[in-house]
Image (cartoon, rainbow, N blue to C red; front, side, top):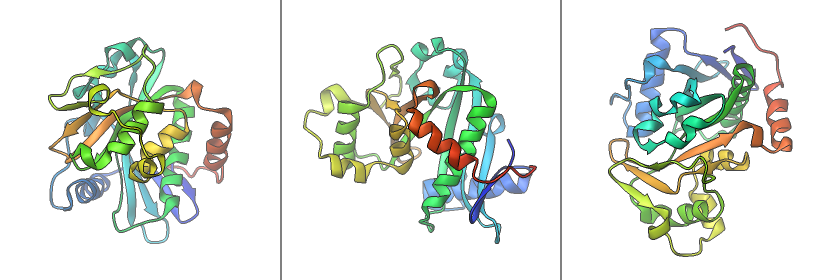
Length: 250
């Protein structure tokens, strides 16, 4: 993957131990509230790590990691620890797991997310990815804090039965039994993580249950985006942003 610059920010692959140290520190800060807590895991060596930096200062604004693998081996992903993905192993082509996406908590600039998606769009096109997937996380482990969001996901965005993940984790919230009320759509969208909102705008779908991950202090749902099913208007918009400026050599 080549580096990509748009406006104030640049996305580029991690290229040194120092880059990985910076990414891990940001992940620790974003996910655990302290840059001193380790957030590394056994999947890191298998992944391509993307850094989003402020061009002028080099300050790390965000990061994420990508794991490319054939859909037949999707169970070997990070998400496969928490969800039974046997149905998706029959999906044709290559999957791309987007994980550990985070933005510096001190920053509130929507351009960071835009640059991330532009870089991701380039990678998906270049690698011929057919399925984008991952765990979309809500911060905290209390389902009561996110009932409207979860109820909206149940009502409008469940995975097709053909590809639906099945429960695997020890602590899950089954939407069919836990969510029985009509969601307040506005409140639901306010609760929704920005990354998950973007997935849904591209036609993404989620598992019919959420996993409580106490180690990460999150509640997450499996999310899939079938590249061929992304609305054409959304594809054109993403590719227009991704082509805003030429690549620079990585």
